[in-house]
Amino acid sequence: KNQVEQSPQSLIILEGKNCTLQCNYTVSPFSNLRWYKQDTGRGPVSLTIMTFSENTKSNGRYTATLDADTKQSSLHITASQLSDSASYICVVSEGGKLIFGQGTTLQVKP
Amino acid sequence: ETGVTQTPRHLVMGMTNKKSLKCEQHLGHNAMYWYKQSAKKPLELMFVYNFKEQTENNSVPSRFSPECPNSSHLFLHLHTLQPEDSALYLCASSQRGLAGGYNEQFFGPGTRLTVL
Image 1 (cartoon, chains in turn blue, yellow):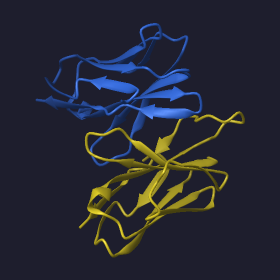
Image 2 (cartoon, chains in turn purple, blue; image 1 turned 45 degrees about the horizontal axis):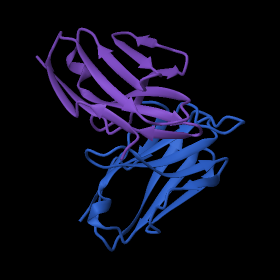
Image 3 (cartoon, one colour; image 1 turned 30 degrees about the horizontal axis):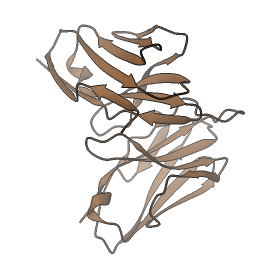
Image 4 (cartoon, one colour; image 1 turned 120 degrees about the horizontal axis):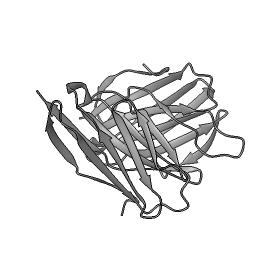
């Protein structure tokens, strides 16, 4: 069983709407949590990184939250744009290793 | 682009062919990685090189043979692959910390490999 689970697996929203992606993890010990965006045919690009003591981190219209007690993170996208269509990958650092989630595929429609 | 380039971007090969994937990073990093990304599955770490030395091999079949001649270049030599090896192969680089651990990794665009 993967130690990083993302939901939903895929999501379709209309342009301009908000959405929230979820990441639950069982990784321990926990060092940090990253959200990556991966456009089709491209490599992943880092959006945010949060350490144990951080609850929220923003990058433009992307806001990530972290609850280290419940081992949950979310990525909130505000006022979605067509260019937000991509896969979003949650990555948890376990000591010296990275554990990847399977990703959420987001499609933004006009 | 993120400073990590990969060639070719697309590759179709038969099971008896021999081919190589190339990765080059222009970020001055000291660690490089090969990942396999299959549809609907998490990224799978294949190999890690730290200062040209292989530090991790995650039980990858011997039909995949990595080579790291220097800190900026990484190759993945392929021979007698199987159709299930078809996937996106991603290269990444990072600055490895003194105490170990993975600092932020920067990914290349990947090579889309199809094995017939």
